[in-house]
Image (spheres, rainbow, N blue to C red):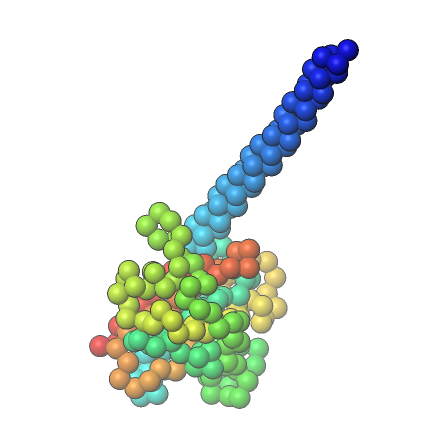
Length: 217
């Protein structure tokens, strides 16, 4: 009888252990699948943003030291733009970035009135280690990225991330957005290189989409 009870207890213990191991394995597999799914979704999102976010130079006014550029979402969406701007070796504040609001323009001359070119809102001051970049097949920090590209930018200074409003959120145009968002950057006299970094937000983290570079000298 005692032997039978011992065997029964051993069997129950083995079954319990197997159940615990089974639950642990299922949890591990589920976690791995979820992580893989998130990675695939991230890469798909970044690829979509790279294909659909367009930046281009309009003109540089060297008398006022203002750089005029346009932003456009080729997929016609109305998502606002997250950008950071570096002039030579310094990041500039969002107060130096202004976007054109045609609704407030009463004389058809851009940015000569009090309200037709509001300053970009600062989304956050980000450390270079808290921003991420798809680079050479992996995700690296923005600090590592600027070092690898020899941009000469600080890897410790905070980076102002600015929100430039999509013009289609300012005007009443139904359907897909085909309009260009125009913005102007005030830069120091004698600047040589201006870089526009565009970002996208994924799971509350900012990822670099593209770098647009303007060489002034």
